[in-house]
Length: 130
Length: 135
Image (cartoon, rainbow over all chains, first blue to last red; front, top):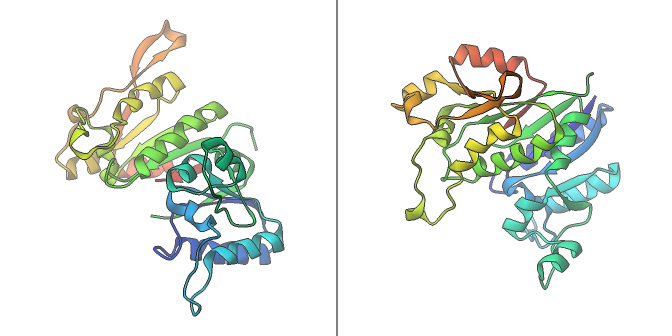
């Protein structure tokens, strides 16, 4: 089955991104296809490479980056949500005159159309969040 | 699978305490360009999103409630409001904005967009959708 995953909550504050991560891993192991992982609302905070959790805790952002590399996942941060919350890649830094970037490997910033397209193209859209 | 899917946006939260309502509306507006069969549902505290006379001056936030009245122009005219959620909050349809759309096939007659449905009826509506967005 082809799946698009939407994650609406930030890491650590909320279990959503952990649950989504394990769901995606399990789906891939079962042979399902992940069309896209779309991060919305505070979910965009899953994509900052500046995250530094305590050493005895899981590193949620690195975990996403590794999963993306391993399975060639398309992980998208919503541009409108990212701009509000200070998630920046090279293109956004240039467009909005920012002096830094913080996007983690494996993530890209794009529009809400990517979420809608995921809904259209996939057999299921699975939403994680409140 | 046909090209057009039934998209349902479920709105369950009050408008300003969290950003879910506003960012849900942003998805709805962007999604309108994709020419899918779109419905919206308002339930739980989400029914407060449609109340009329919202004034956000005191909280320094943007009042986005006028945007709902533009949905008809985006051909979004199936707006389900759960009856029990209204009643539990002491609200009636009169407390909500009067949302309308213009029916091209009937000489642009103005028609109501809001459909008041019971919890059980809404469950049936949700069961008939292809894609559920939950905000």
